[in-house]
Image (cartoon, rainbow, N blue to C red):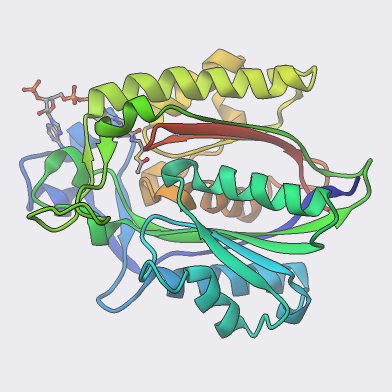
Length: 322
Ligand code: ACO
C-alpha cells in the first residue's frame, strides 16, 4: 500500500491586521483580557472583494512552487472550508480552474475547525487505495465574513487565512501519514453553530454563535483524548512526537493538550498570537510557520490535532517529507 507523504506546504494571509487594540475600539474588551484568555494579539482580515478562493489559490500556488510540481500533475484538490465563496461551485473547482490543474477533480469538505485533519485523512485514503498520486489538501477560511463584530464573545477569536499541503504517493515504508483518528458528536451541535448559513430560515445575517465555556471544556477534553489515543494506537507516546501542530483556538486548550501528552511547549507550534483562529486554515498555517522557522525536516515526527463545531475532532500522526 502506498504511503501518503506530505512533501510541501504553502500559505496565504491577508495583509490587513486587526489588533486587540482595534477590537477594543469596536466592542467592550481589552488587549489584556484577550491576550490572557486566548493568547491572541492580532489576526488578519481580508480586504473587501478578497474571497476564500483567492486565499486558497495563493496558498496552493506557493505549495506547488515549493514542491517543484506542475498543476497538471495534480490528480485531486480537497478544500476544507466553512466560508467558501458560494455553496456551488466549490472552492476546489475555482482553484482547479485558476491553477490550470486540468487533470484534477476537486471538492470542498465541511468539517469546521477539524476540516484540515478530515481533508488530509480523506486524501490519505485516496492515495493509499492507489486511486490518486498527488492531491492538494487546502484549509481556507474567511471567518470575518461570518462574524458579528458587535459580539465580543466571538469577534475577538477569529481571523482569515489559507494553507495548502501537497500529498503524494510514496513507498509503503517511507515517510507520510502513519495513522489518523476522526470523531463526531452531534450532541454538541447547538453549542457552536452558524445559524442562517443553510436552508433553515433565519431572520438575521449568518454569524458564528458559540457557548464559549461549553466549547472550551469539550475542546480541552477531546483534543487531549484524541491526541493520546492516536499515538497510542500506533504503539507510540508523546516522546515519539517532535512537533505537535494543534488547531489554534485558544492557547489554554493547546497547553492542556501538550500537557496530557507530556510534550513540552517548545515542541508545540503556536501562531495563534499572530493569526487567531482561522478555522480550517489553522493547521496548514502552523505547518507553514514551522517550515519558515526551519522546524520541518525530512522525517520530523508530527502530530496534528483539532476540535471544532459539530462537535468534530481528530488527530493525525505523520513523518514529514519525501
Ligand atoms: N472581553 C471582555 N470580557 C469578555 C469578552 C471579551 N472579549 N468575552 C467574554 N467576556 C466576559 C464574559 O461576558 C464573562 O463575563 P461574566 O462572568 O460577567 O458573564 C467573562 O468575560 C468570562 O467569560 P467566559 O466565557 O467564562 O470566558 P472564558 O475564560 O471561557 O473565555 C473564550 C472565553 C475565550 C471564548 C473561551 O471560552 C474559549 O476559547 N472557548 C473555546 C473556543 C473554541 O475552541 N472554539 C472552537 C473552535 S471554533 C470552530 O470550530 C468554528
